[in-house]
Length: 454
Image (cartoon, rainbow, N blue to C red; front, top):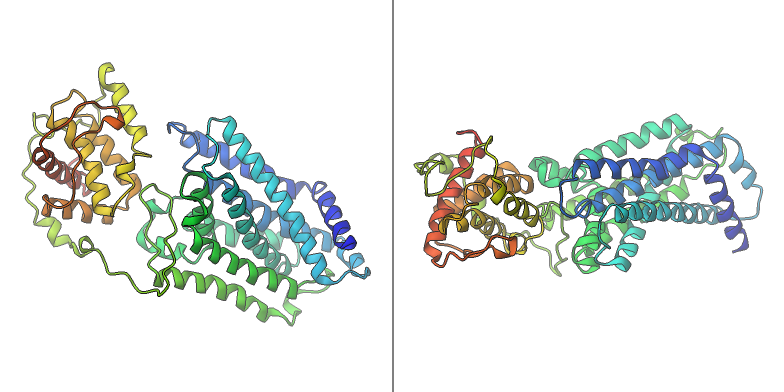
C-alpha cells in the first residue's frame, strides 16, 4: 500500500508539470462552459440544462486526452521503464494511475461546477448523487483512456486516436449536440456511445430524479469501465520500444468493443432510444423481464395521413387562432408575458409529464388558452410554443404527434389555465380549448412542413 500511495503522489506531481495534460484537463472544459454560456445566455436559469454535457466534456478531456497523453509521454521519456525496476506489481501501477487521474478529473469537474454556480446556476438537485454518478462516469472513461494509452506508440498517435473517439461522441453521441435535435438514425447510433449515458446520468443528478432514474446508465458505464480497465492492464507497456503492432495481447480489445456493442444492443432491445421532452435523455427503469415495447399508435401516422388533413384554417390575422408573423414583435405591454412563457416552458410540469401526445397537447394549450379568452398576448404565444416544440422534438416525430392530435381532438386532457406561466385567466370551456388546439396544431404542421412561412 505504501508503494501504491507513493506512486499516486508521484503521478499527481508529474501531471501538474505536464502542460498538455493541464490544457486538456482544465482549460478545455472551461472553454466549453463559457461557449455554452454564451450560446444559451437567454435561458432563465443559466447552464442548468447543459451541465450533464459540460461535466462529460470535462471527464472526456481528462480521461481520453489528459491520461493517455501523460502516460505515453512518460513512457517515451523512460519514466515507466524505471518504475518497472521496483517491486510494485503492474496492477498497483494501473490502480494508482487511475486514482490519480480520478482526483484530477474530480478537481476539474469541481472547478467547472464552481464557475457555473458563479454564473448564476443553482446548486444541483442531488449533490451526493452527482458525485456518485461522476465517479462512475470517470471510471468508464478512465478505462477508455488506458486503452488509448496502450494502443498509441507516441503522443501524436494519442491525439489522433482520441479525436476518433472524441469527435463522434461530441456530434452524434449526445455530448455537445442534444439528441433531440439529431435525426433518428443518430439517436440509435448514440446508444452505442458511453457519452450518451454519461450525459444522462450527470444531468439526472443536476436537475432530474437522481440515482433512482439512471440505473441502466450506471450499469452501462460500469460495464464499459470494467472492460476498459481490464484491457488497459493486460495491454500495459513499460517501454517505448515495445510497439503495439508487435504486442501479443491485441485480443484484449475485443471485450472493450464487445462492452460498447452489448450496451447499445441492450438499449435497442429495451427501447431506450427515445429522447425525453426536456432535451436530455432520461434512463428508463430496468424491467425484470425485458420485452420490446409496443409502438404508440401515433407512430403509424404516414405522409398520406398528413397530406389528407383539412388545412382550411382561419387567417393568422383574424380573431380566431391568430398567429404573429416572423417580423412582428410583442408590444411593451405583452413583452414581459411572452418572455415569461418562453422561459417557463423549459421547466413547465405539464410539458414534461405524461406520454408524448399528452405533453404536446399540453404545450399546444399554451397557445389555445389565451386565444380562447382573447387575451392581448394571444397572437405572440403560438410562435413561442412552436419554437419550443421544434427544439424538443425531431421534425418527423413532431409532425406525427400533431397529426394525431388533429385526427383525435377529443382524446386526452386539455389545460384551461396557464397562470403558472405568468398569463392570468381561465378558459372555462374545455370544448373551446380543444377547438383552438385543433386549429393551432394544423397551423404548426403547415409551418413545420414548409407549406407556409413561419
